[in-house]
Length: 126
Figure (cartoon, rainbow, N blue to C red):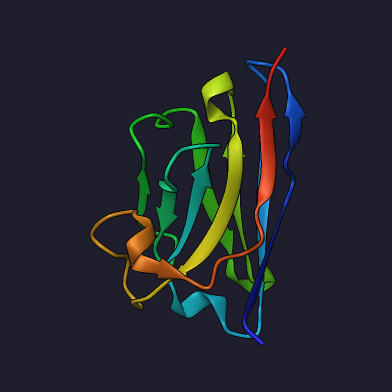
């Protein structure tokens, strides 16, 4: 059964860091682009960062460029999101998902991805 499990979320003060993990099972991760997305209360789900199957190409939302880093370890079937310099506006539930295509889609947007995990809550507050 194809499944994603996100972990690593929590409560952090502004300026702090978290590392999210997305563990995949039921398929070979290394054939697919993977994305991280987030959804804040009352807002639409948005793309945060996406990574190609090899890890050689990455995309970031403008709001997180320079602060977040996406990476993957295909041997461990896991994708990571290192989040530094966190801001209150980063507060959201963070999800990972698999690309509908085996290539990195042109946009890091939810419509290109499926098989969503259950999400992990990130709260940035003092």
